[in-house]
Image 1 (tube, protein in one colour):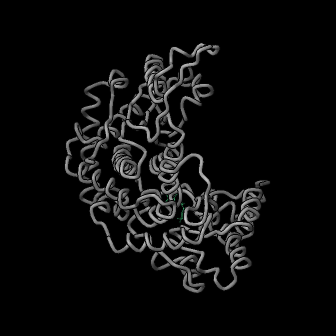
Image 2: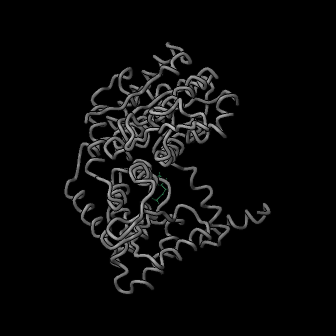
Length: 446
Ligand code: PA5
C-alpha cells in the first residue's frame, strides 16, 4: 500500500481567500524546509522527522520479543504514562482492537494508569489486578512525572506482594537512556528497559518504544505500523511543494481559518474506534501550538453520537469553529440491514443497505449542514483502521503540526506551560525545595 491519505476541501475552500491561501501556503513551504534542514525552533527535538526512514530492525525485534514474553504471562498489561507517553499507543490499540473481547493469558487486554490521580480508579485497579495475571509497562521520558511515578509505586508494591522475587519480570520501563529516577530504579530493581531517543519529544514519540512496546503487547503488528510511517515520510518529505504536500496543505488551511477568526478546530469521526486517536491529536496540537497567547483550540466529537449534544452548537453556536472530519474508506467489518416483514419501525427503506452506507450518508448530510451553517469542513480520508494506515495518518499529523506551529510563530516542540500546575501542586503537597512558593500560596489564601 502506498501513501493513501486524501485531504478534501470541497466543504471548506469557499471560506478561504485564494490570495491568503497562497501566501500562507508559502509560509507552510518554508516551515517544512525548516523542519527538513533543522532550523525550526526546538531543533533539538526533530528526531521524529526522519525516524520512519531509519528503522532499527534489531530494536524492533527486541520490542517484539519482550512483548511476546509479556503477552505469554499476562491477562492484563497496564500501560503507565501520561500525555505523549501513552496517548499514541492507546490511539493505535483502540483503533485496531475488537470492541468486545475476552482477554486471556497470551492475548491480554491493555489498560492504563498514571494518567490521572483519582483515588477510586487506582484503588479499583489494584483490586482488579489482585485476581489477574498482570504485567506493567511504565513510560516516562523524564522519569520523574508524578502521576506515572505514583502509579508505578502502587503497582510495584502489588507486584512484589503477588509475585515475590519474580516481580521484576513483570515490569518493563521505557525511559531516558542516561538520567531520571525511573532509569535508576530500573537498574537497581532489574527491570527490562527501552530507551527513548533524546531528540524525540513525548507527543512525537509513538514510533519509538514509547508507542511500539504497548502496541506490540496488544498484539498489533508494529512492523506494519512502521511501514505506514515510512510510506508517509517518503511521500511527504519528497514533495516540498505547499500546493501538493498534504501536511503543508492542512497546515495552510488551519492557519487561514485561524487568521480569519476561526479559533477552534473540532475533529469529528464517525467511528468510536477513533475516539482515542482524536485524544492523541488534541494533545499533539494543543501542547504544540497553545503558547504565547496563540493557538487553535483543538476539540473533538464522536459522531453521530455527539450530533445529539454538541451537534446543536456546531450547527448554530458561535461561528468561530472549523471542523476536520476523519474517516476510513473501509470498515473492518460490515453488516447488512435485514428486511422486517412487519416494518413496525418504518425502517424497511434501509433494508439491504449496509450500516456503512447509512453512516456515510449521515456524514455527508452533516457536512452539508455544517458547511451551510458557516463551519468550514475539511475531510481527511485514509484506507482503514489497521496499523499501517494509522501509521500514515499519525506521521501526516505530526508533520502538519510541526509545520503549522512554525507558521503560527511558536516552538511546537516545547511545553513550558505544563510546569505551572506542577509547581503549585508540589508546593501544596510540601515537596522539599518548594517552601517559598508554599508560603506565597498560603498568603494568597490557597
Ligand atoms: O508530549 C509531551 O512532551 C508531554 O505530554 C509528556 O509526554 C508528558 O508530560 C509525560 O512526560 P514524561 O514522559 O516525562 O513522564
